[in-house]
Image 1 (cartoon, rainbow, N blue to C red):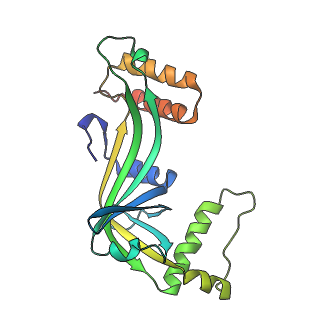
Image 2 (cartoon, one colour; image 1 turned 90 degrees about the horizontal axis):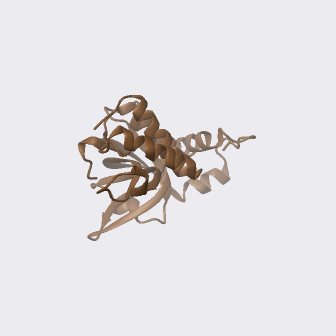
Length: 210
């Protein structure tokens, strides 16, 4: 991912929080010389190694788990994004752009195929994504039904070797222009625009300047 210095986010806590908040990501690998991608939820193990680890599972029928072994894979996590009109700057010699936030994690896949390991991944996934439900569903104890389901999936663990964050929030513009963009985004009242405005406002409050 191309990251100009003004847009780089390197704080590990910030990057981890982003992955957990936007955990439905894209796992990208190579197969026969072509990119292959799977959309799936990830769990983050913050305590593993220097940068953490990503944990999840795919359908056993998905060929990616077989051909990605030994490769360095890429997990892409996308956050809010919004179109930025040059009219909002109220300045000359400016162009349209797109503000967005994203994190890329690189590492190598280790498979988890034993029943206890798979059951732990599935149970943890259920706990994370059900915790906000009014009546959280639980997997319960391993039984014939659960055992049958586990045979249809393959678990994986990716120790993160590189972690890159891009917070593209108009940092290459003067503060005055950025404040105008924040106001314009807020007036749109759309979810992504509101989220980008909040992130820009946070950076302005922290005194982040180009």
